[in-house]
Length: 156
Image: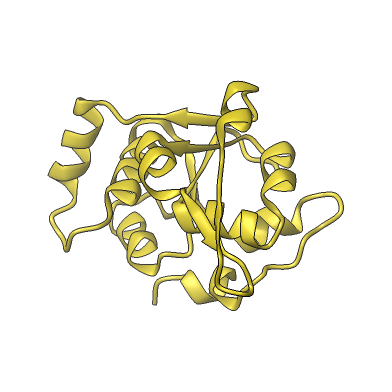
């Protein structure tokens, strides 16, 4: 799979990337980014198999440019808010979808409500499942949990 532009990821994709050890392969195998809110407020730690919190430090990925951090501007957020009047999404999903709408980015999430919003806004073609991203790596990675399959997150 070759994407024509940056693919934003949500917090769950990033956190589970560390938990299941696919993050490094993901960000070196694809042009990956995330919104600033997700980086600073949501991607903090994961819990290992024993339930112990393990801190996540994205600094090296960001400073080397392997992970791009982008922020939606006021105009983009206003356009998103004007187009979508449904139930509240998380700030990270809203900001990411705003950038998808205005910049043509892709968005990787397993959050079914966010994918449904993308469908409602006419940008479902810019949604990429983690299953697709991991399958296109060399070597391919299996999805760590069924929730990351295209079928599980696809809006009904």
